[in-house]
Amino acid sequence: FLRGGPFGAVVGGATEYFLGKKFQKKIQKSLPGIKNKADFITSLVIILTRVGMVSGPLTQSQIEIIHKFFIKNLGFGVADLKAIDTLIREVQNKKPDIDPFVKAYKKSCQDNYNLLLVALCYQISLVENSLGNGGAESLLKQIVLLLGLSYDQHNKIRVKYSLEILKTPYHVLKIPSDSSNEEVKKAYRSLISLCHPDRVAHEGDKAVKDAHLKFLEIQAAYQELEKNRGI
Image (cartoon, rainbow, N blue to C red; front, side, top):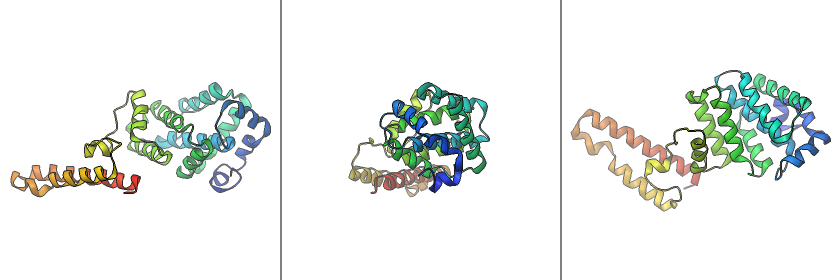
């Protein structure tokens, strides 16, 4: 996979190092449950780099977070880190779409390290306070969705980093995340009727405006669950 497809278009020869037998042997001891070790490492670096690039080129602090992970968990040395840095430069130059690499990461690790990826993405964002940038929050939500993680799993990671709990569609519809599809539909119908702007038309423009915003929020929440659940 590394020699073609999205990887080949982005990283070219930078991945040859990760295909070497010596490198593969090293990874095999450190990452149990990885189906394709070279794809895993390459996808991880590409995703972390793209997350860090939301506010501009990667800073030295962000690069050090990537280095630290590979040194601490995989015993990387100088030559290994040089290969990582080459890949980081290629990604910054080409700015690839992140979706195919998140899917490749998920497939290569067989869902064993999905939470690890999200935690590292938060570390990369927090070190430069880039979460205040709407683009960073949006990209992290996109990654979580592609990984197939639940809202609860995502919020547990946010709590770990002392971040505000995300307001999920379940919060908006006032139902637990394990509700059935029928319960989701019932909650939506009830709230959308209760919050319809026409119900408060006699209370003035402000009341109508507030009701309209709530109405749109409920619609958006249901549409998101409709898409994610296949309702």
